[in-house]
Every structure is written in structure tokens, then in C-alpha cells.
Length: 246
Ligand code: ADE
Image (tube, rainbow, N blue to C red):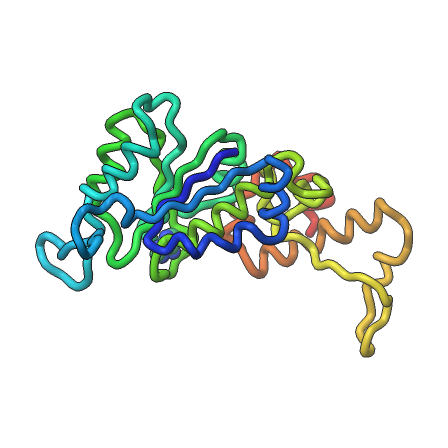
């Protein structure tokens, strides 16, 4: 997968050379390039923003600089262009479903806004040209810019690329995965007792059927306590008789 990121702080993405993301780049699974938006400016101050039309606080990223940058990085043919993603706190929430869908893309281009955001005509223009443009929020809070949101989305997307994780089972069993998305059951490791706290006996029983049932019950219970909204969205067909009792 090819990934381009445009930001006024491309150094933010130096961390992409570390850990599993770095290994995936070494293996050739990923090619990440961070570009500096200011490289597409022409004035001495390399300015990328201007005051908001209609008044208000802060500055808005201007369309002219973004357009020069995006025209170059997207290329002339919309059908061959990358999926263009703008992090935006006022956009629909980015979910595991989006991460799964985007993990199949060949090329992603993230545009990181700063200040009070970017001129609304930027995504509108590229959408009208046939580019697949997405705007996503990563949560109901406001960050200083799109860089951290891009890192979050990138990590969620790239770890789903086949070969990225050592053990693909760890992806299948995780929270928010599949149509039957529940919070994951709690995990324990050895020793069986630590500082007076015991691992639940059933997990030590060796009975895989009972362990699975215990974990499933725990996942249902924790989800109904912590995230009742996820229970409401559950596909009833994915529940079995034993689930209905809990
Ligand atoms: N930019 C600032 N806050 C954000 C958020 N919550 N999600 C995505 N992009 C953002």
C-alpha cells in the first residue's frame, strides 16, 4: 500500500519508521511519504492560511496551496487516484468498518488540516472531479490538527493488511471486529495469582468450550455496561440461545 501524507509538520510522521509500521515498510508492504504543504507555496512567508470569510476566530487553510499540492499528488486521472482522506472533527466517526474497507486500498492520501480547518471547497472540488474523498473524525473531541488523527487512522488501517501482524488470529478476535462487534473480554497471563488477585478459575480449567462461553459472557456483560450503544447495534442473528440468557 502506498501512503502519502500532506502536513505543515511532516516530522510528526517520523515515528512511522518505528515498530510494526517500520517493519512493514522494510518488508515492502507499505511505502509512507510525508510531504510538507509549504513546499507548494510561492510567497516568502510560505503561508498556507488566511482569515475566515464571514468573520470568526483563527485562520483557515486556503484552497490555492492545497490544490497545487493535491493536483500533483493525485495525478491527472481520478480513476487511478488515491483515496483522499481529510481528518476533520466535524465529520462522521471513523470506525473499524472504515479501517477494514480502506485496508484493501492500493493508495491513500491524507491531508492534515491545522488551525480552524481547511476551506470546505477543497474536498468538494476533488469529489466533483470523481476522486474518492473521505472526511473522518476520530472522536468527539478537538485536536490541534489532523496529524494525530491521521496516525490513529493509519495504524487502524495498516495493521489489517495481510502480513502486517505476525499472528492474524489476534485481529479476528479483537473488539469492534466483524458484524457482531463487542468489547473484548479481559486478558490475563501467568502467574495464576498475583498480589492476592486470582485469574478466574475457569480460564485454568483447560475446557475450551467453557473458556469460550465465559469469554463470550464477559464480552456481552462488559459491552452492555460500558458501551450499551454497541449492544443496540448488534445483529440479533449473530446471537445464540445461550447469549440471550445473559
Ligand atoms: N482534527 C482536530 N480534531 C480532530 C478529530 N477529533 N478527528 C479528526 N480530525 C481532527
